[in-house]
Length: 169
Image (cartoon, rainbow, N blue to C red):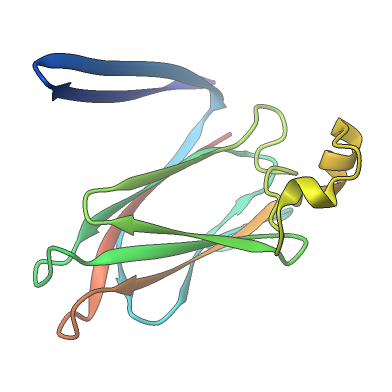
């Protein structure tokens, strides 16, 4: 099995002082990748399906190790963006807005993928976790099951390009 190395670098100079940061980590047990560039329309569409059984265009819940989504943008609108909605097996969801040039990463866990990795609530999670023990928290977590996408920007664009990269075993 291969190892995926992920590097994150931030660099800035403020008031003649440099504040740089570099983090690197390795994602173990990777033997499959999927990398695509798709145009996301202005209506919500399924982008990535994740389930307990393999199907056309879907990934196995227990196999997904790493996902990265990068908004490439739209040539007609430099301010176009993509909103991704992450849904779990308990019918909860959260949404992130990715501007042109921005990225969002979601990491699975070695051995269990994206099983029990997503907790969402209509209120603060800590209020719904009882005494905050690990057991209570694991009962709250659902498995990532679907990622949908919708683009937004000026009225004249028909969609926005996004690249996704998914590593699994």
